[in-house]
Length: 506
Ligand code: GLU
View 1 (tube, helix red, strand yellow):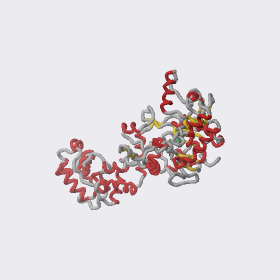
View 2 (cartoon, protein in one colour):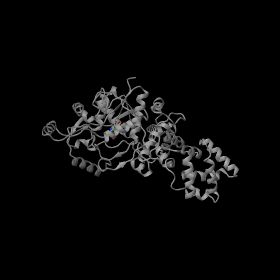
View 3 (cartoon, protein in one colour):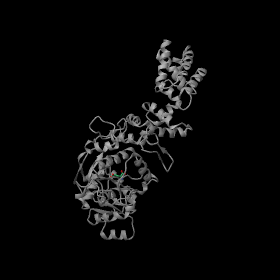
View 4 (cartoon, rainbow, N blue to C red):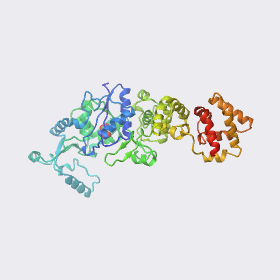
């Protein structure tokens, strides 16, 4: 088998939707699994859709995801340049070649003339008029005009595009690695523009020329490109590159959670989850779209979740490192039908990854949040907080939001707990317990627990009575991790002070 070379070929028209990240990921996994190369190619031939900052966004966000490229505009490579606008000079010769051989032609029609044609056809009962073998003869192009007319138009500098001359009634057969055989009749295809009047190729020509020149072996891309694939196949044939046609794999769509249609930014906004890997600020209107990174997701968890949107390993295993994904990945296990996005599952993945992180690693992230909130505490203390809270958290930020009591004494006390558990005798018990605890010399979680249990036994109290009252006086809350662990970490002095304060305030 020739070397596997795949490419991720985004257009810098905005931020990268998670569907795009998944395409990049599957290309990456496929390349690594097959000891091949993955290339990042920027497809910016449509200058009207160019968005400032999108290229940098794409590179930085994929970098955060851990998807790294072997060849790119950043790293260079054997087939430089990797940005299509920098390859502008390469494409016209191929368009010209197609014209010379009769596979393509010049078209001089203005926007108004094209609109008129569509209107005329609609009136004649054609629901979706196209520039094709039927209409082309009535338009201004090098098929309908004489050689001299064409020559003089070009000499006068009239604007033209180059269109492919779609043959009539031919079956184009394409074998897709995911979908099997796809057959399209050319009668359903139009004479697509392959070269524009601004001197730039369109996506179709540039994409095929570059895949050929960059020796791409497999084209793995989203389903929305499937309708373009027969045209690409024809271009390969007409350019004489038939033996070099890459293998195609069109990936299923990522659907809304209810399965009704493609997942869009609007769905994310409505249902409260990001659809972009990292935050994006629209340079035109300053509108901010949230990202997984800024929302506190662990990149590996995000990638693990994405890998499962359209693929499965065929086993029960769900947690995979990126290396594990490389080993397990196969296009054979990518499904044809759309994959429903499941936000709860996304949270679940993050939770699993958070639990697997060491307390030291988590503490580094939590310290960043603490610093922002002007809380200065030692790393060792923060590490223990992480240890105590990680089973109960989905994000590191939860540890701050739900564990503020580790860093500052409570200023209010949970009303429901007070109503249910703070009875007439409670202050007496808390006060006696406080005195008992102040006698404990080694203030460890185990010793605190022994002392607490001894006290409730002696007084014939239930655990469910005094523990919540003890908890609310230390943390202000009705729930949380082991209270004995919390007390031990806070230390004797702080525990006693908090109990005294609670006795005064409640
Ligand atoms: N430039 C296309 C895009 O923006 C690439 C499609 C392809 O991979 O062929 O998605």
